[in-house]
Image 1 (cartoon, rainbow, N blue to C red):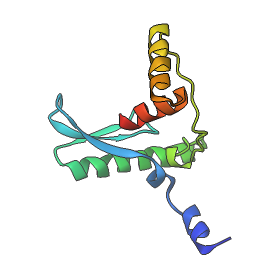
Image 2: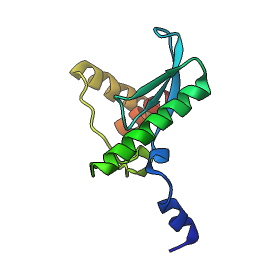
Image 3: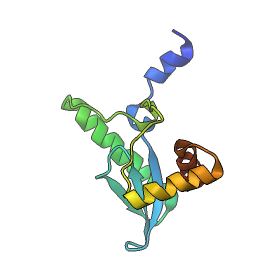
Length: 119
């Protein structure tokens, strides 16, 4: 095993989670969020402090879960994705997409992929 892989094992699991900070108009503060722990948040008037706050909160929760031998959520970045998912749409939209794909001489899959990439 390489030295890089060995050092990766020692990284605190809480640092591998997906964090973001957004503005909360309702609270008039920044809110720090963690995708793997959707029930947690941290408010602060400072953007960086909101990020540090949610990271600290998640670290505390992870430590508590470890003490209790609870299963930790898998980080989104560590998950494997197939690149495939199914979506149900109304018949009229399906028909419209089929027509648009035919007019552009592309497959439905390609058309929808292009539309999603533009979002």
